[in-house]
Image (cartoon, rainbow, N blue to C red; front, side, top):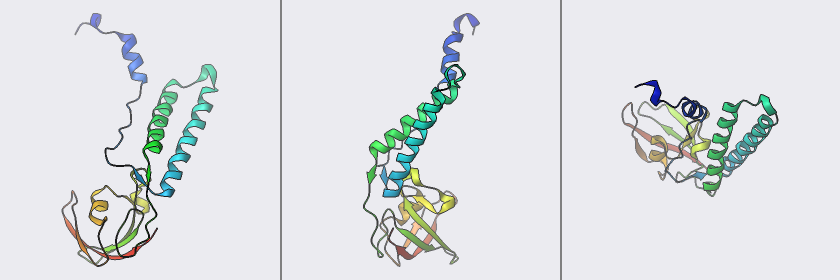
Amino acid sequence: MSRAFVNEDNAAAQADQPVERQVSAQPNYVTPTGLIQLQAKVAELQQQLSAESAKGEKVDKQRQADLQRDLRYFNQRVLSAQVITPASSTQKVQIGSRVTFADEHNAEQNVQLVGEDQADASAGLINWGSPLGRALLGAQLGDEVLWQRPAGDQLIEIIRIEPA
């Protein structure tokens, strides 16, 4: 293509605009703690955006655009949040429950089902809509459920359910 057909000003402007964060299509169920974390993230982003704007001419336009994008995303997540009643059952897995399960080799794992934005697998916080979360949600104490994993399906047994 000839350079005559490229509008370099538009290309430069588009390069500064970050790609919007995708919002999940699943319901935005959150634990009470998850809602507090979302609200704190919005406050943190608003503070960072204000600090960035206060720089005047030295403002980093790309950072400012990134902060605005993230603020739009987290504001939307707060608005769409559906706070669930804290899990209270020791017999049935609910969002917020802490679950101990054993795999086919009797290795035990302990996880808590939480909302999408609160999930942190390294801390044992599992998104209720993830493959593991879907396998556990609604299961009862002593049930064996099928965890459909990309690495292959695995049968797991629910050993303990603790309320949030």
